[in-house]
View 1 (spheres, helix red, strand yellow):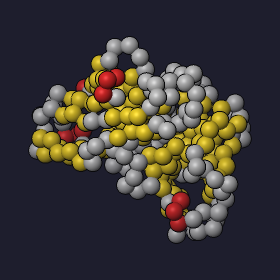
View 2 (cartoon, rainbow over the protein chains, first blue to last red):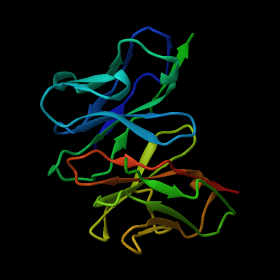
View 3 (cartoon, each protein chain N blue to C red):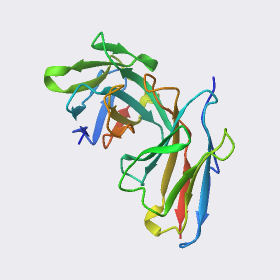
View 4 (cartoon, each protein chain N blue to C red):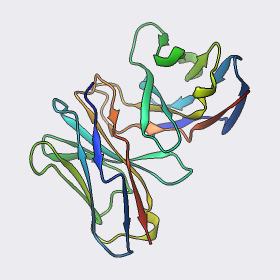
Length: 117
Length: 113
């Protein structure tokens, strides 16, 4: 069964500092990979996705993520965080098109990002 | 930009009552999903729906749950007899096809008392 691990439950970063949120997945083949952000009381907004091709993907709000097949990782990065980036971040996977299996997203437990002034 | 909408935003119900959560997916999307998020926990897949039938469901989606697309635009989740542990945020999502990302609605917070 596929699974997603986000090893950091909470991360605190100073405003203006760089950020990296970790995500590892377990899946037989390379799945589709996603990062979503959830602000308090809000729904889920897609930051970026990886299906295939260039392993460094750019997303919205200045975020990027790098897929590393050898490490089964898809870490999210931002060079300089802003106070408005404080939120819950979820990594998720789904089977690739035609890959079969359940097609719902499997989410990690999330990382709560706190921004210090 | 088109978006997924959900109503109501918050529903309070008593244990044992039936609830229906409503979603309007993006109009040209073909795949529809329900997820739930118990407070402080991760988002969990409940069910996917395509071509007017369930395509996949998780072990959470037992006989108390059902989904329907009654009129070609709404997509509903029914819980027949709610339990305290059904209290959660329920998210609807839709896809155009599996090459594209799922768009999530803002969620319905269900509180069972």
